Length: 461
Figure 1: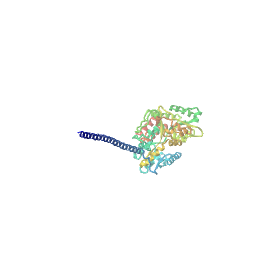
Figure 2 (figure 1 turned 30 degrees about the vertical axis):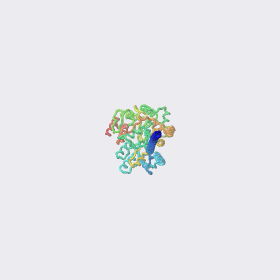
Figure 3 (figure 1 turned 90 degrees about the vertical axis):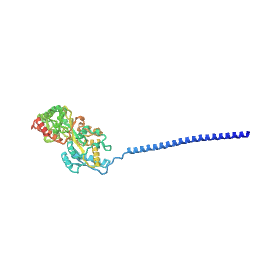
Figure 4 (figure 1 turned 135 degrees about the horizontal axis):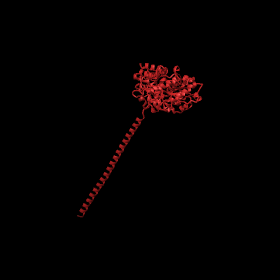
């Protein structure tokens, strides 16, 4: 019995031992399974992270590739034809500017400048060319001519070129406001031209004569009358003249508070202000202290030989002023109740060609208006810079301060709001002719002021 009990006890202990061993192995296996699962999840996460990082890296590389745009290029050997009306020394300046551009531009563009005669000759040649396919890439003209050319649908609208990111004009507001307004005064408000050779009017005077006779430079129209009377008494002949009778009428009518015309071609000068302005000049001619250029065509001749000691004329004519007998200077034009001075000069426009040629043409137009080039143009001609920054360049300031040409300082001293210009419409030139004729007839005594203005108005209706 004792042996039997001992055997049963041994069996129970053995079973218990085996049961304990099985439980420990299960726990261990469960723990290992949990660790392996965690490891697998971690590995999976790392794989996912690696994939995400790789995707992000690829996206970043793609973004960088998109941001690095292809450099802007043009085909080699593009040649552009530039028709202009600048003669003599001015033509040489144009050729020098084109030569410098041809040698320096990174696109290999070649500009061929061609003098086509005066503005009338150039206009006739452009009109003839528009009837064919033999047109230049670029030419210069006044706005009233350019609007006629637009009717051919061969003049390129420049707005998209101006704003282009590759070759546009990022500092477009640096171009003087008056020039921007003028060149966007076409019917749809778009830019079909940009400023090139711009000028304004100043009053030239014989500085030596004024100092010797104690005369003050007039700043108002009333002062102009009084100084002209005093100077004429000394000279024994009319002391003051006006180069352009058309500009006289257009400017003085608006200085008196009247209107001239608008972009619709409305006749706005049948007014008391226009009659008062014209009568002021007629009275001066009759009184022997005002004069027109007459047979001399320009007042620079009578001024240089001492037959007049004051005249109002364009800054572009300063190259023809000078005498060994006296020192000359200039001042702002005398003003009326309104401050108005005419700004003139032609603009440049592009004609249709291939897209690449048009881009190349605009690149050259941009070059012509660059601060350094427009300043160089102004320092070597009678014209003025078209950019504000050009007026502030050290070399231009040094040139102005040298006193070689006083118009460079005075011509840029007007406020932007002072400027007026001929409105742009096809018959604009006819309006100029009509009012110029009115002045001629009135000062010649052929018609009264009232009749001259009324007839001018009638001829335009």
